[in-house]
Length: 475
Image (cartoon, rainbow, N blue to C red; front, side, top):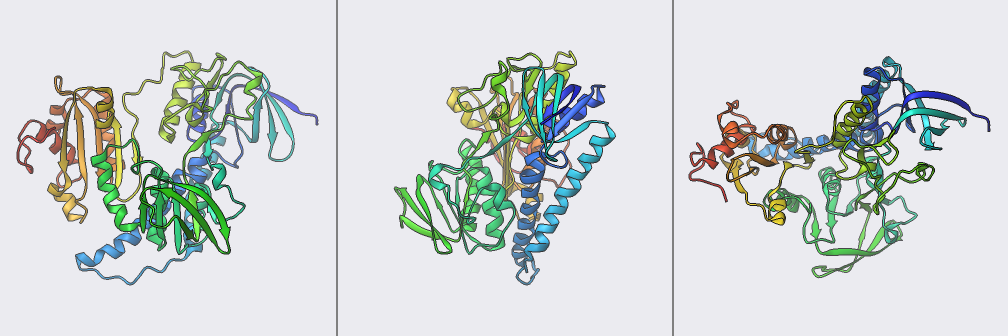
């Protein structure tokens, strides 16, 4: 097949939350940019099959839950009537609006967008198999790899059945199963399990490890888990799935664990959410000096530069944490490095958010990390039971937590669990990045009544004079 050849200053392979911001910044800084992606518009897994559609459905779930909770406030609604077709249409409309907007911004910036799959031929060229069946060779001065990741399905859970779903399939909401098993107690499993539970499914979750949301501080995670225990049918910890097979219109699952009441159970659907794998295969890396580690992550330096000085890697393909906002920031670092500016990837804090209900968010050093490192810290927490705003919302189960250096009083980390934690964590990120001290938070006037003032009140507790909490509350 004959191919046409085009030269570009910057080739970006992958149009997700790392790739398209990098392409946009490169164009804004005067580079001739070519962006290659399989979808019709930029957006990647995040916008098409991840962050955005999942949050749209989580919003629906929250509305359903609030309608049921409203009775305690003197409001009685009928049981919500769920129209799955309209729900899908709304979710798809949200996705279409955002990805369409990115397509428009791509054209306005005069970026050459190629729909297809790219593979490196060398450190200076790539071949693109375009969606229309043609091929194009692209030569480049610099290249950014932003190919993302994909869900992992263990061999013993791979069935030729549409009743076994990964996270992408679950977002399509094919139906509301009477019973759903979620395999994996990480943030994706907890989020999507929450959606199906709100829609009416009896949700069970199974996790090999001793706890859900491994890695999160337990006092925060326990607040969320306490809510999930009420909404989920069953949470099975220290338990693994040994075998799955289709049995009529059910999936029969065999479990193995210390606390399994019934080792063989049947479910209408199974969602497998046990992790993600970087998309570093079939990129032509063997045609370059680029190296990958044992997990398949492309090896990069602090500027996100690979072993080929003119090729960079960002986002999920370049290592943990696999977060959209981390990818976007890395994209900026890579482009600035290409422009010759002294940028490096060296954040003090990368926020993480679990968009369940309640939400959980944290940044910087966690209490768990401090203990594992043997680092001396002071922990101070403000319970939302003492928050006026949380009480008016009927949601005072939350907690705001500060991790402080005991000598300098510097804010090393922040954790929040409760309504709107994902929005509130930005103040914590700024505090950690700016090396703020506890008194900076204490003396910053926060609006009342708000949830954000729990940050100020947590800092007040450190100094022994919290307005709404008695005593000096740090550990």
